[in-house]
Length: 359
Image (cartoon, rainbow, N blue to C red; front, side, top):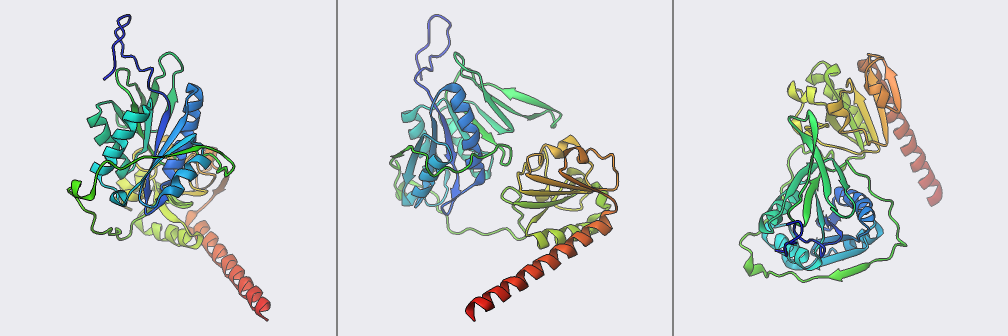
């Protein structure tokens, strides 16, 4: 791939520079993890004194390339073609492989989503290079090594392992959603948008996407702005009905700790934590959750955390912005009713205001 230095017998990767972030999208809407990775990628690129690159792949996704500039990228590559309308491994991986060969980024980052994991694995196999999956922390060593320090939980989530890719470039990783913070959108930022061609035609692709079927009862914790989560303190599956009522009143979704999921009270798709999902909502209710580290690492980045627990010494209160000590079976319904009442009053006032304007 590259020449070998005679002096230290290590590959010469001097031609590889920059951090590249894959902007994942569906139907023209970017996944939030893409902007989060651009925020983290900006830090890595600045440490390396290298450009931050982004790539938007799809059909009708030109706005995402511009948005990537607003979100911190210096250069945004755009591959817009009808063949790329829906994600398929072969055409997307061929676009990425060609871009990596031409642009030579030293680091490439993907969201740890179904799409990101599939695409990153296919690319790493073809290059070949190393790939660290499901990272929760990223850093770099400066010159001369310029190594990516990709950390992730290991040994049944009991410790963190930092993985290096010393012999190959680019260094690649997928990262969990909700771990990193997106930069504020800055519409005044200037950057370069570079259009690239799709190397395949439709007849070159063996698969077709016929339709998308939404899973019944699917919960999207990753994108949720409000999460109402319950743990062992609920005492059984029936209590999740109280949480669902509160979540519905707030316009949020229901989450859970591993203890509640392992007990069979609610499905794994609701689990927040090291072995579940990492989330970054605006509001997080931790109800009947003690605050074990396995759970808190998955929700510690929430903007506002409200804890409800009968044990005043529960560790969750050390993390919460607001804490209520008491019986959740009395507190949660009271909060729900108050929210419903306030929303009803707000809706009534809105109706009266509109009626007054029409008059």
